Structure formats: C-alpha cells, structure tokens
Length: 474
Ligand SMILES: *[C@@H]1O[C@H](CO)[C@@H](O)[C@H](O)[C@H]1NC(C)=O
Ligand SMILES: *[C@@H]1O[C@H](CO)[C@@H](O)[C@H](O)[C@H]1NC(C)=O
Ligand SMILES: *[C@@H]1O[C@H](CO)[C@@H](O)[C@H](O)[C@H]1NC(C)=O
Ligand SMILES: *[C@@H]1O[C@H](CO)[C@@H](O)[C@H](O)[C@H]1NC(C)=O
Ligand SMILES: *[C@@H]1O[C@H](CO)[C@@H](O)[C@H](O)[C@H]1NC(C)=O
Ligand SMILES: *[C@@H]1O[C@H](CO)[C@@H](O)[C@H](O)[C@H]1NC(C)=O
Ligand SMILES: *[C@@H]1O[C@H](CO)[C@@H](O)[C@H](O)[C@H]1NC(C)=O
Ligand SMILES: *[C@@H]1O[C@H](CO)[C@@H](O)[C@H](O)[C@H]1NC(C)=O
Ligand SMILES: *[C@@H]1O[C@H](CO)[C@@H](O)[C@H](O)[C@H]1NC(C)=O
Ligand SMILES: *[C@@H]1O[C@H](CO)[C@@H](O)[C@H](O)[C@H]1NC(C)=O
View 1 (cartoon, rainbow, N blue to C red):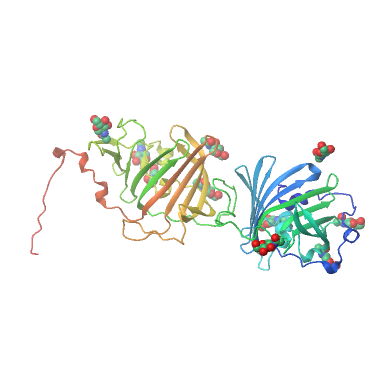
View 2 (cartoon, rainbow, N blue to C red):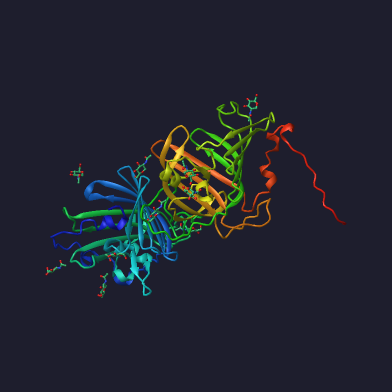
C-alpha cells in the first residue's frame, strides 16, 4: 500500500544519491527575530488534501481524520479512480486497508506504519503519535522561518525544515505554509491553518517532489463520528481480531420484522413467535406472489409444529385453513445433518435461535454504528445464504444489536430485555442483492400458548368437548 500521505512522501526510500536537498541557511530572507510563534496543530482534526506528485504527474485526493485523544486515524484516498481507505486501529494493533469494498488486515507494528503514526507506550500498547508527527511539523523538526508568502492567494508564513528519515542518511526538505494569524481569516475557528506542504528529496527513480495542498482544515471531527474510524458497511476484513462477544439470543421470543429490498423496491412485514422448548413457530405474513400451496396473496398465519412435523396455514381473509407436512425449506426447519450422515434419513428439526437469525457462523465484532436513530454494536460474517430463485450464494451479513447504552422496553411481554436484535443486512455483491431487515418489538419471553392455537383448522366434528368437575368447597 503506497497510498497514505506520508507513505507516498517516503515511497522511494532505497536510493544511492547522497545529494543534499536541504539548505535552510542560504535561502532564508527573514531575520530569525521576525519569526512568529510556530502554529499549534490541534490534537484532533480533519482535512482534505490535494496531493500532487509532481515527479510522477499524478494527483491523489486525500481525506484525513486524526484523533489523538481517541487514538484513531483514518485516511481516505482517491487515486487512479480507485477509492481506498486506511484505518488505523491502535487498540488492536491492526491496520485495515479497504479498496473498492475489499479489505485486508495489516499489523500496525510494521516499521513503516509505526514510524508514520504510531509508537509503543510504556504499557506495551500502541498509541497514535501526536499530530505534529502526523504532519511532520513542530518545534522538534527545527523549522527555520523563511518569511511571508502567498499561496493560492492566501497570506502565509513559510517555514522550512530538513527531515532525516530515521535510520538512513536520506534528507528531505519540507516547506510548510500556514495562514497568517491576524492577517487572514480562516473558515474555521482555528486561526492559523496549514495551506501547503512541499516535500523534496531523493527517491528511487530520481528526486521526488510532492505538493500537499490542504483544504477544509478543521480542528474537529464530523458530528457523526461513531462510524468514521470503523471499517465501512458491508466490508469483511478476513482474519481481523475479534474483540466482541456475540450477544445471547433467548430460546424463545416474539418480534416483528420489516424486510426492505432496495433493488426491487419492496417492503413487507412478518410477525414471528418462536419457542424452542415448545418446538413451535408462528409467522404472520403475506405471500409476495400467488404460489403454491395457497395460490393467492392473502395474509396468512402459519404455525409450524415440530412435535408432529405439521404446518398449519390459515388464510386471514377467508378464514379457511390447510394442514400440510413441513417442507425442508420452511422458515424454521433445519435438516439434521447427523442423521443424514449416519443412516441417510431425512430428519427435520426446529432451527435453534442462532440458526433462525443466520448467526450460526463465526461473526466478528466490527464496531458501533448508528442504526435507526439508535446506537448499535455490529457483527459481521461471510456465509452461505439461500436466496429465493437464486440458490445458495456467499453473502455478507451484518447484524446490529442494541448497544448497552440503550434499554429496550417492548410494549408486550413482562420485562425489559437487553441484547436486542435491531437490524440485519444481507449483501451479495456478485448478483447485486441487498436486503435489510429491521427487527421491532423484540420480546424474549415465552409467548402465550394461545398464540399457537390451531383450533380454527379443525371442523366442529373433529373437536371433542369435555368438562372437568373438581369436588370440594370454595
Ligand atoms: C510528465 O509530463 C511531462 C510533460 O508532458 C513529461 O515530459 C514527463 O516525462 C512526464 N513525467 C512522467 C513521470 O510521466
Ligand atoms: C508484530 O506483531 C506480531 C504479533 O504480535 C509479531 O508476530 C511480529 O513479529 C511483529 N512485527 C514486527 C515488525 O515487530
Ligand atoms: C533538531 O536540532 C537538534 C539540535 O541541533 C537535534 O538534536 C535534533 O536531532 C534536530 N531534530 C531534527 C528532527 O532534525
Ligand atoms: C550513511 O552515510 C555514511 C557516509 O556516507 C555511510 O558510511 C553509512 O553507511 C550510511 N548509512 C546508511 C544507513 O546508509
Ligand atoms: C476577520 O474577521 C473579523 C470579524 O469579521 C474582522 O473584524 C477582521 O477585520 C477580519 N480580518 C481580516 C484580516 O480581514
Ligand atoms: C382458502 O380458500 C381459497 C379459496 O378456495 C384457496 O384459494 C386458498 O388456497 C385457501 N387457503 C388455505 C390456507 O387453505
Ligand atoms: C440429529 O440426529 C441425531 C442422531 O441421528 C440425534 O442424536 C440428534 O439429537 C439429532 N439432532 C437434533 C437437533 O435433533
Ligand atoms: C435414522 O436416525 C433418525 C434419528 O436418530 C431416526 O429418527 C430414524 O428412525 C432413523 N432411520 C432409520 C431408517 O433407521
Ligand atoms: C469458526 O471458527 C472455528 C475456528 O477457526 C472453526 O473451527 C469453525 O469451523 C468455524 N465455524 C463456522 C461455522 O464457520
Ligand atoms: C463461497 O465461498 C467459498 C470460499 O471462498 C467457496 O469455496 C464457495 O464455493 C463459495 N460458494 C458459493 C455458492 O459461491
């Protein structure tokens, strides 16, 4: 990866030329007494940079977020029409390189990444270097004041320093231009912002010449900062360190789910009651096409009874009901692969809660994100997924659980519950499939047994009425 700001600046480190690119004394026209104070660089900033690699006739657009206090750095680049992001995760000592939706994981302790942004603290943890190192500017760089100038029409102070790449004999000149405090009004509350940095020095194929033009320099991070330093939505980083525990799903629950497909523009809702102990599942839904077994699109109540392998389908418009056997592809059914392997028989059983939510894979914690005006913890996995009419495909599944900062108060059920599923997204890149499911009213208590009442599926003649009399006095 040669995309970061200062990786580019140092991309040609192996070189034989020992020519000096740096001469601060000869060109300085300003007297040292006239030198203003060095501008401060905020510990938190975001900036756009147009990086012109003059020696390669190339422009790279850069967006950099820097957060010393939060120990986080992110750099977005656009180069040769390729969008890239580099996210430094100092807490896990990882770097995520995301290019066109694909992610690879690097170690932060590799020498290049470390000397760019990171250092080892006394407690053995990685921490981002302070912002003056990130910009290679500040008193430790022995800047010489070169006088005032004008860059892009902006009144600036000019400093020059010689930067010796650690461990080598290579010297680079860095010219920094900061807007003049008091003589130029910046767009932000910060009185003196970097306007340009110009780097010259030896490179692998001749001298390098890089121009960094800073725009939109702001001493703050975006308002919605939660996801800035997380890997982007829908991106799986294989092999990243898992720092979170997948929440427990209770073995009985009710929820309503809203299913949204942005590709074919539909939205539909399901109600689901599930009880692993009773081996019963009820779903209320509307079929999207007139297909077997009902051949219409009337709203249905379907009760799957895994005690007897029976499926009760009742039509909520006409009130009629069909009793069918459970097909293997039905919502709550899983095949018993052990039985299939041992004696070749085809045995269905009720899906466990993880299977029902497609969570029976190795899900990795990816961070916190906004989800429907709430805050969620997000887990992701790449796993096989059955798409109707398409068969099995490898899908990226992201599962959002309510963050502990929020408490859920379902309007039914007895108690407030935690670890509440809020949302799931399914993406299949190859076939342009994207679906989102919003879970609502999640309630982790046993549903009332009357929910699974199938008496309407039996005629009066199939019913037996009886009375029980208890002797004694009240
Ligand atoms: C950059 O453009 C100039 C002018 O067309 C050309 O002379 C030079 O060789 C180019 N350099 C590279 C690295 O392509
Ligand atoms: C970085 O850390 C990993 C794991 O802790 C270790 O295996 C590797 O040798 C380290 N690399 C460097 C350059 O220190
Ligand atoms: C700055 O100057 C001091 C004293 O001359 C020197 O020790 C130090 O290495 C210099 N720093 C850099 C970054 O050149
Ligand atoms: C630095 O330059 C000196 C003298 O030219 C040479 O002896 C030494 O090996 C060089 N060091 C490195 C790391 O290149
Ligand atoms: C900067 O803005 C302030 C307030 O609007 C104004 O008083 C001041 O003259 C401006 N400075 C310059 C250099 O234009
Ligand atoms: C209910 O009756 C209608 C009309 O006869 C039929 O098309 C439909 O399939 C039946 N639905 C169920 C669930 O039995
Ligand atoms: C699957 O079948 C095996 C024996 O064939 C049985 O021991 C196991 O309990 C079954 N699993 C489930 C979930 O029913
Ligand atoms: C195969 O195993 C399953 C689960 O143990 C059992 O229910 C079924 O009766 C067995 N089938 C045969 C043909 O033995
Ligand atoms: C999860 O990861 C473990 C260890 O890497 C592996 O043994 C297991 O098969 C994986 N499970 C799934 C469902 O992929
Ligand atoms: C899913 O990915 C795995 C591993 O990359 C591959 O072996 C498998 O064939 C893929 N399955 C489908 C349906 O594309």
